[in-house]
Each structure stands twice: as structure tokens, then as C-alpha cells.
Length: 277
Image 1 (spheres, rainbow, N blue to C red):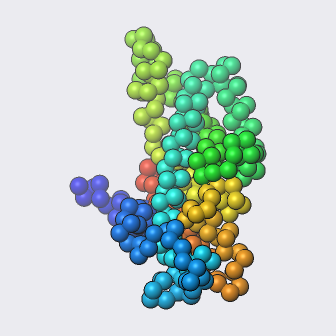
Image 2 (tube, rainbow, N blue to C red):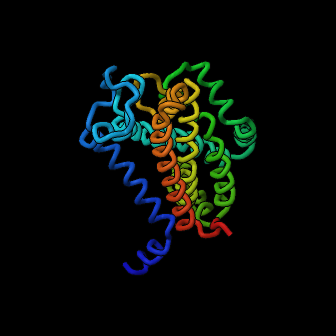
């Protein structure tokens, strides 16, 4: 037990990141209990009230409690992070395994589309996909996943190419095991740590991309408590009600920073060769 706990306790990034992410998760789970109001409760008599004992973070232009909206906004960020990561991993790992294992035409076609996707600015490509799919948070998640799968495919492909010639894989081939069984039973477990590291490091970028698209009006729509949408709405009142931008911005920074620390901690724990020098 001590041998297992010692590297965890020494990994400050992992500890701090875990605590910060757990705070966000607990807030998202218990937002209904913590929030003093519903996020869409509007009262025009309370328009743009400054932070006070009644409204901890103040109110917006519709008289909605900003503290409650920030709390409920954490649910959106976590939902985006989990769903986008699952879609990216599914597409990228599947194509990477097929490309690395079979090579030939499969590898050339997959590598072409991966390189094409990788070469385009993610935010521009996401906007193009949303133009086809339409506005909305679900479409933003799909767009980001379509844009980001290539990073998983490239790494999984390279790892698969190096593993398929190993003795344990050749032994499985000699015993006439099916290709799918070989990829799932022998190759995938050996590249799983790299996938976990990449997923933990890509989640903050996913949250930021979703926030940026919501800020541009392409993601979540009113009356959603999305932080990007809140930042966009705050621009017209930024001079006389700066709290509208400050508190959603701080929540976003806290969440992204927490996931960044967690990702770096997981990277240092699972793949010490990638530690920052």
C-alpha cells in the first residue's frame, strides 16, 4: 500500500487537480441543493443588482441569480468534457487500431484524413461543422469530437505499429486468433495508459472550445446557464455590471486549471518519460 501511495502523494499536480475537479463534480451533482434559486428564475425588479447577501454573485439583465447560474453551468462543462471525450476516443482509437494493425490502404486512407483534420484550425473547422449541423450544445459536442479524433488516431496508430510485431502478438497470430480479438485483448491494454493521458490532457481544450463556440452564439442558447453564453451576454453590460463576466470567467478558469493539473498529474504518473523537463 505504501509503495502505491508514495508516488501519488508526491504528485502535487495530481493531488491538487483531483481536489479541484472533485469540487466541480460535487457542485454539479448538488447544484439543486446549493443554488438558492433556479437558474432560469427571472425577476425584472432585480435587474443588474450588484453582489449582496441576497445575490452572492449579483443578478443579470433579466434579474436571474448569477450564483445559481454559475453553479448549474458546471453541469454543462462536465457533460461536454465527458461526451466529447468518449466520442473522440471511440473514433480515434478504432481508426488508429485498424490503421496501425492492417497498414496498407487502410493506413493510407486513415492517415490522409487524420493529417487533413490535424492541419486545420480546430475552431474554424468546428464552426464549419456547426454550420452544417445547426446551432446547439449537442451539435457543438459532435463538432469538437469530429475535429479532435485525429490526435487519438495518430498516437494509437504509432503504438499499434510498434506492438503488432512483438512476440506476444505473433504468438496469438500463430494460434489463429481473430484480428479483432488480438487488437482488443493484446494491443489495446498496452496502449490504454497513453489514451488515458491524452484524454486527461485534452479535456481542458474541449471545455475551452465549447465555451468559445457558445460565446460566438453557436453553442448553448438562452436561457442555458452555459459559462460561454454568460460571458457573451455580459459584454453589453461590462462597464456597469462587471460581475456578469468576472464570476463565470473565474468558474471557467478554476475548472480548466483543475483539469490541466489533473491531466499533467496523470501524465507524470502513467508515463514518466513525458514529464516536463
